[in-house]
Length: 199
Image 1 (tube, helix red, strand yellow):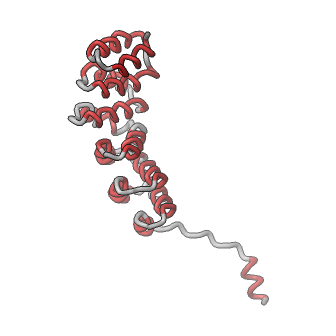
Image 2 (image 1 turned 90 degrees about the vertical axis):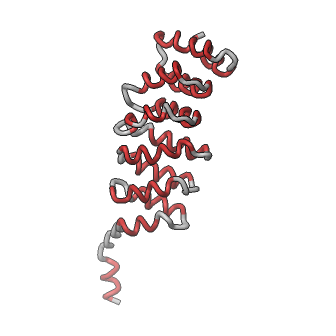
Image 3 (image 1 turned 60 degrees about the horizontal axis):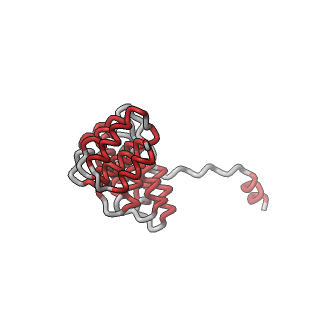
C-alpha cells in the first residue's frame, strides 16, 4: 500500500509528443479527429509537405481539410502554391473555395503563379483566381484585378474580378468598370454589380 501511495503522489510524466512517422501514419486514420490532429501536428515539418499535399484532394472532412491547408499555407513556397492551385479546377466547390482561401494567405509564393492563373484556359479557374486576389496581401493584386476586368473574355470572370476589387474601389476605377459593362452589354449581373458600385 505504501508503494502505491508514493507512486500516486509523484508528478505525472508529460506525455511524449508523437513522432513525425506516427503523425504521417495518422493522416490516413479512419477517425477525422485523428487526421486533423496529425495535420496540425505536422506544422513546420518540411518532409511532411508531399504527404499533406496528397491528402488535400481525397479528404472528405472539412475540418481535416482546413487543418491540412492551414499547415500547408504556412510553408508559403512555390511548390506548395503550384500543387494547391491545381485544385482551383476541381468540380468540388468546397475544395475550390478552401484552396482559394489558403492561397490568399500565401503572399510570398502565390504572386509568382498569378500570371499563369489569370491566363488559364478554364474560366472557372480564372474566377477562383479573382477570389484569391481579393484577399492576397500583395501590391500587385489590384493591378491584376484591373487587368482581368479590362481584358478577360468571359463575363463571369470579369464580374468576379469586379467583386474582388470593390473593397478597394476608387474614382480611378469608375471608367474601367463602365467599360466592362460596355464590353458585355447582355450580362445583367455584371451591369447590376457595376451600377451598385459606381452608379
